[in-house]
Length: 608
Ligand code: AGP
Image (cartoon, rainbow, N blue to C red; front, side, top):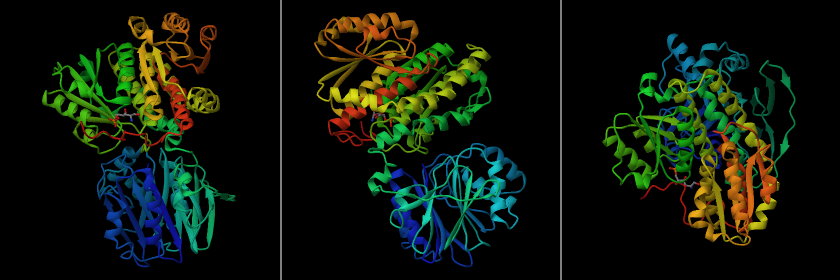
């Protein structure tokens, strides 16, 4: 996610802005910029690349004098990483300047209206709409202007805004994207997150949704969207910088697990229009979707596990044949592709060498390639014919959680879209799926809040040597991801196995006390799974079962049961994976492993 900072006071703004942006670097970004009012004009510098580039461009801020300014580190969502897409954004008269963290979901509609009124856009960003909207409504009263645009914009935003003809004032607004303000260095400071202000103050005001702040060097006023003045209490921050970067969580992985409800919502909400699925970026007509004869999903690691889930969902919902391949295998097996094949490359980083190579090979064979990617402007995103982004925001922990969850959501949306277009689901079925989809964020939240029970259970298995995850159908796909999470961050050997396959050899490894995690979310397979649970238990296994609420027959068969809330058969991975993420996390913490940076691993495997 992007980072914003702002300052108004008696000190030079630029060095304070650069320092604040430096404290937000951990959030991940691809470009940065600052704008400072020097008493006559708004000076601005912005550039693709690291903050170092910006500091060099501005001689550490010296070239931008003035005591009122805003700054930004950009994590691209709409518009590739580039100088022109970097924030801040100015209106044509250079009298208003804005920085933004969030996604304006109706920006295309607003952009079309503004272009119709003669506005010219320099960038591909959703943010530029904001500054032209402010320009359009500006009547000399910044507060009134801001409330007007708040009624027009849909989506999430934390804004820093300067109006040239109000040179003593800095404005900030919040809806859904975090924003804090505080007193600092004979002035006031705004930021997306605590680390940027800790140098100046530990007493901050957390801005709530649809609140506006007007700051001067020695005053701070808070307003509602109806321009009513409100009083706010400051909060004392006791965290050190390291804890602050993790938002108070012990590790980025835990923080990112807790970001899953919002990341999931951010991924599906722009694509739900009432009771229809709109995936504009797919750029495929209904006829083209109907003409697809086969889907080939290619990925690595957790992205591959999302693909295995998608096979069951797409074949079940859309009745289209799906092959799923590890990218490292796919690229050397001369796969059979024809004009009726759609290749889907799933990748969080968009830079995984094997997945990128698979994309290039597919295109050489004339196939159409859709990327499902988290990093905007990454190689896979740029080279795919079309790209469907997962709006998970930057993922810092090497072990993926929120990006994986968003890959699942993107694949569910694709399956629902294909199924409706291909006529394999009815209107009422689609409505039900959409209802189920909308419930997932709250259900994930519920499961995350069950973390203490998982932690207690995990602490019993810190010395485990072998852990097995078994399931059938989608539950097998869940087992694959649950096993990888445990392995990669706790270094305990683990294996995911199709439950029906155990008896063909592997069951000989089960002995007294072996932990077996059995996933039973597919109602049509409960009976089969229960017999597999009995199978391993009679051989001494301790069985942890993850199953749907209401399936209490499992209590008799398993030793420990974790229930997940009800959803439809296709979406259970999004819920069952939460306790398994927490299980792996707490085992890793209990063993004192480096949770966020496990040994031997990289966040993006850009080499073969
Ligand atoms: C996930 O926890 C792993 N770190 C790893 O398997 C990862 O999913 C895999 O390397 C693929 O990465 P990508 O999604 O960036 O292509």
